[in-house]
Image (tube, rainbow, N blue to C red):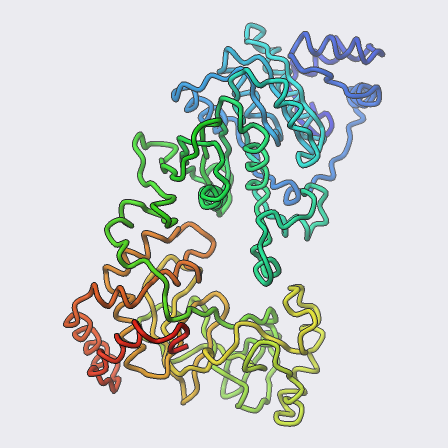
Length: 585
């Protein structure tokens, strides 16, 4: 049978028809339901009781749920059961359970079946249809097995960000607590795009400043926000927090732990097969920690399905945040502050107009229009997928470079390059539709990630998106520097020899080992400016024998027919040590 667009069992339908259908008093109906399944205030109003009775007569309600809006990766019952079983093996035996976004209630059902000392359950859920589904699932559980321990269950149909958890915290302080759940797997910007009400009050809760707050660092994961809410409200309670969340959320929590000092310890992740469990392409885990303890700053990583011992430990080592502590210790001498500044490539947010391909000698844009443009502002353009080889000197795409630095006026294009200006102005609506606030108040056709460094003839680069940590040397094409897009990072050089030396040092096995020890390969961007700036080339140069550098530089020179003068090593090394920041770039 379907009730409120929800499938319920025949036994639950039979119970409701026999016990509720003819009841007109909400108090009487709630008493019956509390006696049967422990849910307090099963019906929050007489209207809800009436809705249920009408649905029993076949007049079901429709659903307007937007799965994206609610971060809808519901925990299936078998997985919920396995997670709770794992908690029991670890000796976790709560008296009170809280689930801040309980969805269909599968975690609550699993907990009731397994935790015999559970006295009370508190749950919050914004989507009403899920509230009903959870209620019916719990009811069905007790109808099928009346011998189960029956806690008092309080299910609240509210926005988790408006719910007063402090009141709950005051009521349950002496009991052993378990906060268990699967918070939404969406970010604040994704929900904002949906005009969702399922959002906390607008705030830059990590206090990012300036461009960081504008360009994305002010964006945050909803699950991270909810996790921090729970840690704040229940920091003085004995018990455990266990959430099914994305790996990136755990990384952020452990990273921020150095400043926030949450009273959590015994921090663990147990990686799950997200594709199998949710058919989702994101890395996730069961995150566990113990509450009301001395703060810990590292996290043990396990495999949910098999490992009994941690496969890795990440977190803070001394004053450094690293992805693999044991590997980092072997190469920590390489850690420092790069005197060569890593830059991000060009950002334009207008690919249909700005990204061009060549076909039979003509340039074609993303709308399959053939173009006639002056060559001066057209440059070869590389994306992350183009950085597959050690040396790149060709391209499959081109782009129009409208500025030589951020904020530069673009009015000069009209007089100097009329064909290009005509093309840009004809397609101005595409530029005007760009949503990022970085373009607000900037000249027409503005781009970002542009500066003197962009026009350096030689670049050592890496993709931020791919898991490959090897670096690529980008050479000019037809006498013009190749540009990179904003998924790539690079250092620009005027001197080929300095670029090759840098390439050799960065691709050395010791440097690669260090880079991988500080890099989280499951992140959306495996390599970032922050991690790359920790590659201290002056330290690396001291730790790698000169003969190895020269041998590899000569091999590159011969293989790619480069005219290389390897006698410049001393000057290069001196510059690394003594030149001011921003050298070469």
